[in-house]
Length: 418
Image 1 (tube, rainbow, N blue to C red):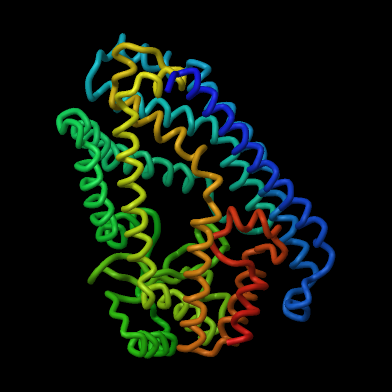
Image 2 (image 1 turned 120 degrees about the horizontal axis):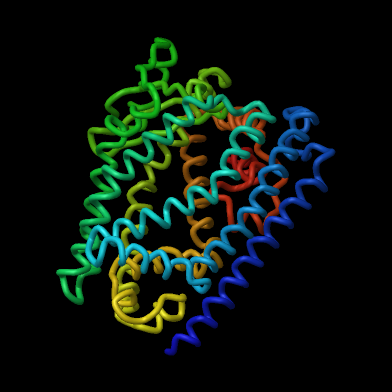
């Protein structure tokens, strides 16, 4: 393949992917607006019209800012690659730092900083305007700055050494470097699963043991029925950042924890909380987490192998706007380019991963309906959709690409039939 042909393939794919994303979002926007003024039949009497309209307006506001982000992201990607910006950054770092691992780390850091600065206005608008307008944002500027500082610190202390190890393996392990990087990636992800509940998550939120004795007894009885052992039941102070509610279990092995957002406990009745947790335990029962980790591992191996085939091909670099010579042979540049353009080629396959995720959600719902009353899960879902202002009328095609959970009407219809 020549650089010209690869450039052409990249441009055609990028144009098609961007057009598809914009078209799907516009479909979604029109569909939600069209159904704004009446509650779907399955939710009549459960969701007030004002709440339904709020969900529609909230969705429209998010989609509109999302449309801008799609265009900006596409322009930035073109500017960095074919526009030559990435090549200029690389040459500037070369003159300043020379070739080596520090150069590779600085290259990633520079592109990451550019992406952060360009994406910052939309992120702030989403948090402090859209979320605040609809009554969800609880984040203050001091807390936002603290979260930002902690995030940067984690990226430097954890991401920096990991990237350095990856670049080193790419340099010294010969043609099979991709296999060693994959093994490192697997080990890193398993380590994060162990450390996240007790080391990383507490940096951002406060976790306290569940104190409600009646609710605790109800949940412990559910855990016993389901054969699930955890290291504790905890309440997270999610309300200091958002009014949205959720529950999840996290960790691996003996480090598993069940976590409830304090906002969730405030919104749901005890039997509804039990039903929501039963849904989460359904994922555990069906080994969905293990299956997703296995799938992610297989895909990451395939992508690293693919990068291993591309990284020695001059047309791959030149076709993306990076000149020949030392720049073209840099492992950091190859890894960066690959990570930037891979999503462009993968987006049309999004319905496949969404379909798998939806299947898991249906299985978890069915499991919850066996362990608790299906009506309790239904009322819990209705409350969560209402309180989180989640639209009940998504565009079906947009949902197929973007939503990991089935639409509310389909989930509840299945639960009613169980």
